[in-house]
Length: 260
Image 1: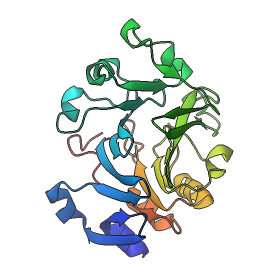
Image 2: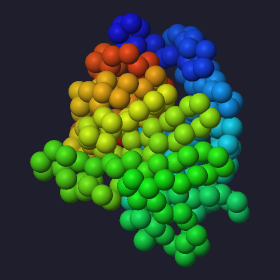
Image 3: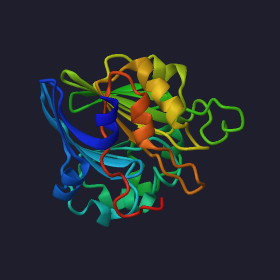
Image 4: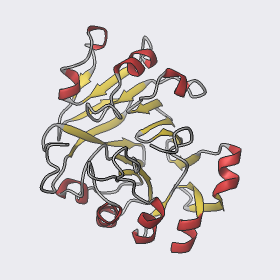
């Protein structure tokens, strides 16, 4: 199974527990996305780049940490909900955010980002570590996201930044934002789908990320946010070789920026 994870992209049906393995090149050529059948309906993931992605869900369309300009989202459905994990430029970009916001788009951010939003976005909902809220029947919990390694704490200090757990009907999604292998990550329960960051020096390496995933045991996991401008690129295939139990999904997160 390790070799399969290292060579192929898996598309998965979560409810049925059925996984179809296709060559990555074929899926990339077809522009395929991963879809998950849940008790409440289909959830489809569209990677955009780095830490940005879109989920089509039974509750509506969710954009996570949108950056890169509105044109990057031109072929994707408009957001009903936007989630921002923290203030760094690869997660929060005010011009992109403003361009994507529709009249009825709901915006959820961490308190630090709430303090820097422009006036036109001042109606955003702010939730901090440990807080919970509800959007269209989806439970949303803010999970602490921070560095623990000496010398890295200034990148993401404890108490400031969010990850998120989204609880749909019968299906729970974890979005890490930028974090290391923390006790709060290890304590996650009943996660069906996880998005887990890894890049140095800002978050964690592939070994730390795999250890975190093995501790909370999601059903499926996307390694993302794994390339950096400072030479901190982590190998998702190496990550996959160390993950036990979870199905590792590795679509192309950097289609237009191979050097990022």
